[in-house]
Image (tube, rainbow, N blue to C red; front, side, top):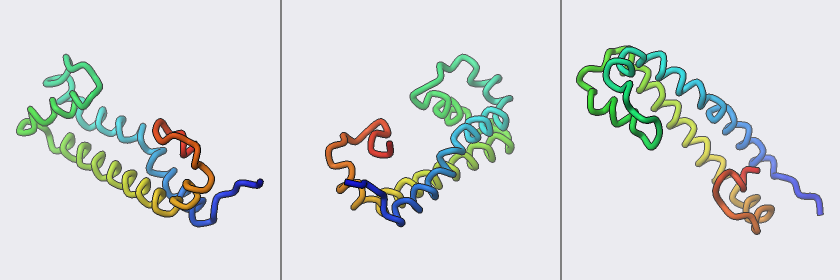
Length: 112
């Protein structure tokens, strides 16, 4: 049996790849935009599990405009990525049911 994605699902995959590829840019943008705040307020924070974000939140009244913009921009990029994933899920629901019925969800297994 030749397993192929439908055209709509394939197009949705292409739409999704762009925001996901930008993930490294999001981190770099925050690191650069908030370098002063990271050094001044959050240098002792152990990375992971949202601790850096919690540090920014704890010091939100002291964040520069540059850092605020970097965080806003990161939020906007992440919202676009979530929208792309939702679009992909809606466009590929039938393909996922048909082609990936035996695949467990999680860790990118269905995407793969």
